[in-house]
Length: 157
Image (tube, rainbow, N blue to C red; front, side, top):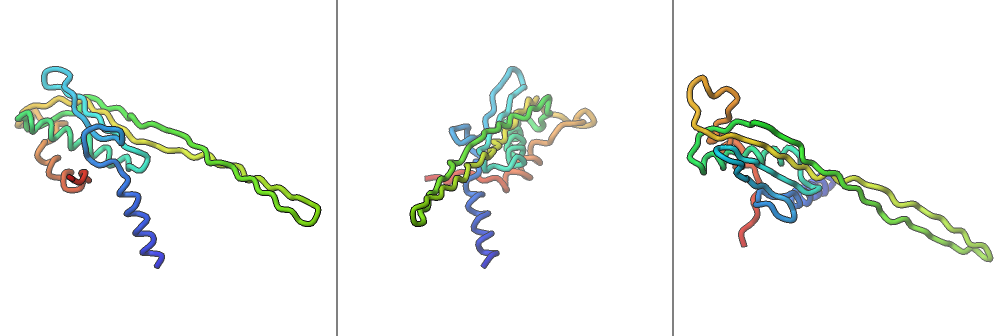
């Protein structure tokens, strides 16, 4: 029974993660040209999204960007962790019990919690690289084929 409850808890959290989608209110991924063959790839997740998933999203978007432009490889020129932290506070609880002519009041303070919303920015250069000149370059087809099957895309209505 405990295993079933644990599996349901995991499935409910996984369902809340930011899917691989265009950037929106709940996060997503985008590619913006910066000039020539240089692009900024940005991905943002919500508080339920695993940071490694955001890394997959930026790499997949980089591969898609290169392939859509007819290029075979991409090189990461720069990267930036764009994660955000937010804090919340739960409400405190006060309870009064009366026993005869005496009232007892207890107060349980609220608690502070932290939400980390992962984010990643990459600056990439795309191109057609062959031979020994492709050191540090990612093969766009290989990256696409490795990451694409495991990303969660939104359901089409």
